[in-house]
Image 1: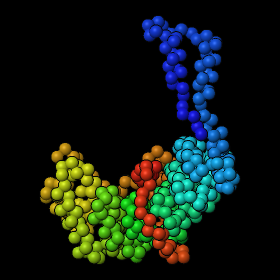
Image 2 (image 1 turned 90 degrees about the vertical axis):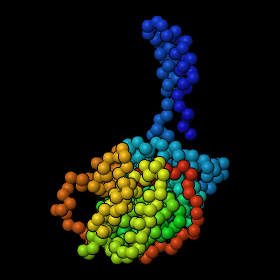
Image 3 (image 1 turned 90 degrees about the horizontal axis):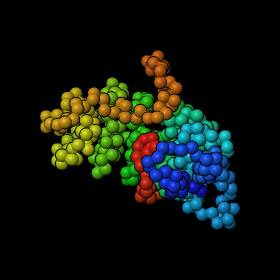
Image 4 (image 1 turned 60 degrees about the vertical axis):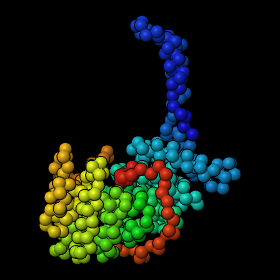
Length: 395
């Protein structure tokens, strides 16, 4: 394992021994300089060398590791360390060249659920806003085990982590999005929305919004599979982030205006209106503190009402859309929600193209049909951080 860091205590003692705080700096003797450099080098870690060592462990058969006393918890610790190293984009891309990517993807099929989940987390870090590593993972057939874990793993945490990795893998990655459609990914997203696990639902809703925002024609697939009714239900969730994500997806559907109407979203007008009125009432009963935290939800409810009924919601009349001290809401609260940070422009090779000059392709929905429901295992992974997530995806 990596060392804990520089020996700060030793360096502090050395500094205090060579300075009383009043005299000017003096030149170090050759002996002192040599001691200092040796002290620093002894605490440094050669990241590439360390990644190669971790790769050797990942390449070792599980039974051999067990015979040497290496436990699944030890493997998780190694994957934790590897994840720290590959946060640097150069190290993420180097993992393949040193032979570590393929055995990492192999861990997605490990018999231990925690290792499968952790391996997916490392993949998420590697491919996030990184077109080169996205390509390498696709070429190494890493999409298939991720999709399998997402659709049918018996452990809900493994399914959630796999979905997070898929979200990062296919973002601004046309071959990845095509593979997701071909693998019947939308049906798996529908199953995720019905899982009852809020973390799983959040990630699924975030990916749905991204796909709809990137390609409005996917709205027909979403509508045909019954997503609007499910998202209407989730718009009343007790979890604030699930509510907001559901409203964000509904608003994207409403703006797509498929087949000359609002994406078939408003076909069941009474249910939609009832849900929105319930959210207005719920917002009206919030404390001032909760109202401030629900700023995006307030804007989403008003925007969705306006998109479907061509009039502002009653939140405006009640003075709840813009609270004292807040700026007026922007005209579009959702379109930039998924603009990725950091590696954004590198991840968007077609950012400068004019979408009006490109021919849109017909949506694909192929595959063997909806994946069977995984066992209804409830629970969440400790320490998981949204948005996503590294993503934010991660989300």
